[in-house]
Length: 81
Image (cartoon, rainbow, N blue to C red; front, side, top):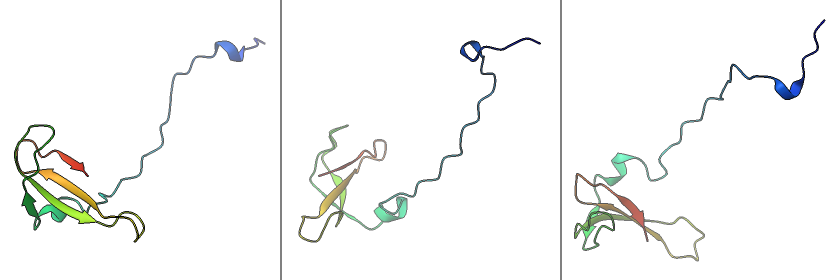
């Protein structure tokens, strides 16, 4: 009988766990449908306007977080302030 050393075993098959689907915290594309725009330049394409929304992401005594989305349809870059 041949003894196999664990130091030289070859892995021929790997199984990866299925990742959970992640929900968009901001509500997905529908959340951006009825938002206002402001004169905030995009840091990626420098378009002069961006859509924005404010959400309370921390405790009530902290300021609200402002989320931006570039108005340029080809860019669509998202960032927060």
